[in-house]
Length: 286
Image 1: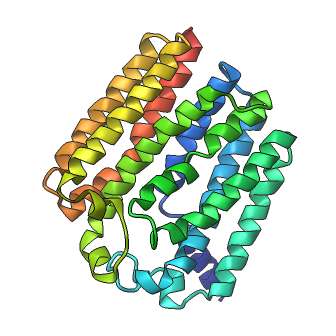
Image 2 (image 1 turned 90 degrees about the horizontal axis):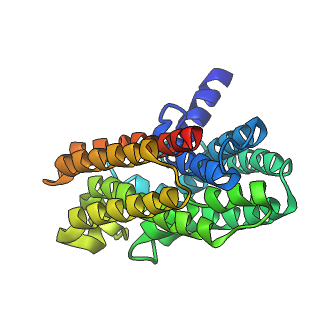
């Protein structure tokens, strides 16, 4: 019985689908390197890695509670633990609260500025699941939520959040818009039936173009960021490889097949890793 409950809790937080939290991790770690002007130290790497995993898991709990009445009408999500009734709403919220408190405990090991930013991060995490009811492009809200590790990284290293961090956040927001629009393209038919608002629906026939433009803006902003720190050839090699991955994603989504769109979304964490690896390599040889 205990093993069964644990399996359900792991399913709720997407334990077997790590791509989701890796999408948050790579830009956060990249921001740590920028903030520290190189290696940030093991303590901050561990804090932000574990914190990213815990907060993403907590967000899954809140999201599945908020979307339980919608998810039962979507083929891909109908069997999620909260939607199917295998886990109660109270259980899911309690688990989410425990995970968020664990993440907050990690934040307390940093500094006062980071702690203050963590409250804003929690607020946007709680707001996003409900944005899909009122905002025509809720992926933009998700972009802010998924980018909050960037200002927090600068706060943890520098005890301040410079304008440079805001540029990184803005660029990363467009990456989130790109991959979550691909994700929304998978469920577009179901979302139209139930009245859910998504960028895939809002962009309509320009969805593929919007995805590719968003990739381009993300890579351009982060390329500028690396150039401003004189990161050199290995960094730009990472940007070029990431651009190649974006072009491959275009081939996967250009005809809008469900499997192709989902594959492009699912593999985006490799694009993020490539940019992060470029940042690390650039600092290593600078």
